[in-house]
Length: 215
Ligand code: G3P
Image 1 (cartoon, protein in one colour):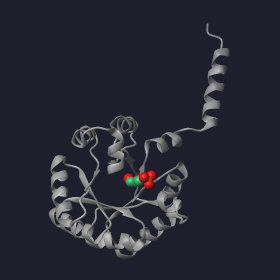
Image 2 (cartoon, protein in one colour):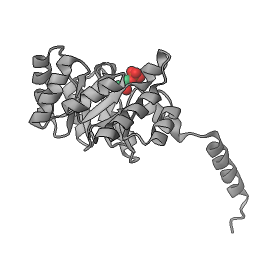
Image 3 (cartoon, helix red, strand yellow):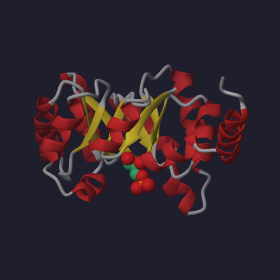
Image 4 (cartoon, rainbow, N blue to C red):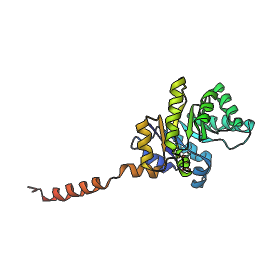
């Protein structure tokens, strides 16, 4: 299972990278805005140590504008995956990017049919937003199972990125399903490490170690 880190915070990505947790990075306009830094500078910093795909989002609404952005963003680094929203205009860009060898990540995917269209258009990745589906009373993880089944049925090579992950159970369930990739916010990664019994166990070993006679 590949882990992408869902943030534009370079230090958080570095921390996860030093522990072998970074197979790629996903950003979006909201995550970039939080950093209050120049986008290009952020991207260059991330790309200085991350070799896996780095998702960078196009923000134009028409195909022509998105395509121009896709070519520009793709020229910044060797490992860009251009995030394209799941719209008819977006699908045109996905197809064109596939023809030009530019990696794409179709974002804001909320249904299996949308994921089917993304794969048909030649997307490298598709990002179903499971947390946002849970928010409106749907079971986001069921969508991952459906998309995975459809992609297997027809041999699509588009990789599924489980996105909008909100807590460790999302990662656990995605892993049980066998999802290709989970894009994980740093705070969720931190929660996955922690267990109270680990802390209690460490404290007990440290306390007992003090009782061992030292020559
Ligand atoms: O990368 C996009 C996605 O993960 C957004 O998550 O929490 O804003 O729904 P969220």
